[in-house]
Length: 361
Ligand SMILES: *Cc1c(COP(=O)(O)O)cnc(C)c1O
Image (cartoon, rainbow, N blue to C red; front, side, top):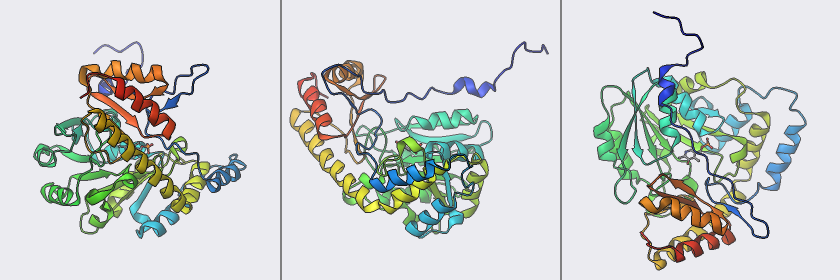
């Protein structure tokens, strides 16, 4: 066997798709521009969060608390779950990486819907696991019976994204319970609830209610969306102790910074104020969806802080039209465009472009 003349990364890395981040708003002199491409919270953090960040900044010569003690204590009190069931990391994307690393040998399978969150195939591939993608239905829903059927000998993890990023619908409690009854108990089922605070109507339920007698269930959440800390990178999961411990074992030591820990505790303390803002985003979502439907668009149920237009081949043209008008949206190849519900002025610009665009889908 010949010796390579340069370092060779693991072969699995050749299969890692690139994460395409939402582009920043394009600056055009004399015209406001808005970023509706990353599902961020349009509101700056509450004063208490900014103050906590400021205070923590004065001690960044010290390492953070490796045990995330204050974060786990605050989450434990808020969720009524023992701290042993918690794992925090630098965003829920990091938790996904750790979880796949903890449960998948090379060649094991991770089953998830597609399209769904684009971090999923990356988290699988960097760990040498295989992605098994189960198409969403025509109305952008998880096809949970098909996903259960896709679970095979080598499946170790299933990811359920609810509401689904980027298409929007949420799974119901009954659907999820039926699904969990089908999946073998050694397969980890992650319910990614990144947008749970935005769900309204009969789809709204707390996946933690299903945790007690299901040792393979993982409920994953983030501080990046409703809690407005996208820039600080904090996510957490709740699972039975052996699963949570396996994820914590893979986490980077000192991963969650002291600033992020302090902000998390402050944001959890400001929950009422933050949920009031979520209410405003949901009201805007209703306005955006109603207006789009009046304009003649057909769109799936929007339960997150974003809407999905399945524009197909017209996807790049629509994204360019938005960009030229001053809003950056998130195009997905020739599938469609995801548009974050942002500040009312930004939504108005998007709605104007959508109203003028033909053909509508
Ligand atoms: C935004 C998002 C997350 C959050 O990821 P972080 O790493 O916590 O910022 C997780 N899952 C989905 C589906 C998302 O859209």
